[in-house]
Image 1 (tube, rainbow, N blue to C red):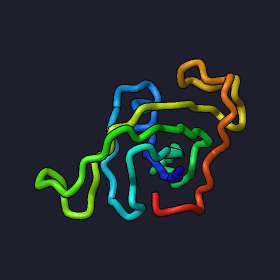
Image 2: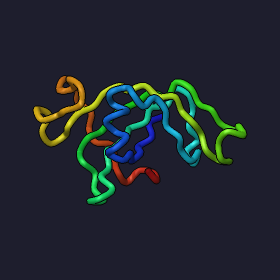
Image 3: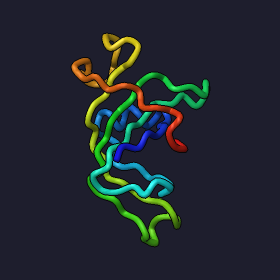
Image 4: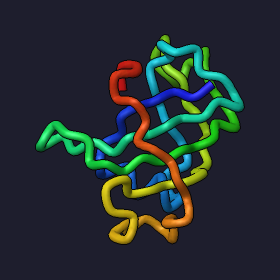
Length: 111
């Protein structure tokens, strides 16, 4: 399953570069190992999406543990692709111009 989620700018680049390898989320979507997360970069100051989208693979989930609040999951993630939708030549995230990943629908889910 693919889940479209919003992610704040300060974390987005770290995810794309592979430095931030986890996501902690409310488990309101029944996240499972093997799912894909379509992470849409979000600017909290302008309250708008930036046009960047990154697809990550969930390879491990930790839940129902005393280390997380009830109803939350920690997911181990690995980046798949990234693309600047409006101007691929300006993309500053890795060398991703070869990919064609559309911005995930923002009307899906809670973000």
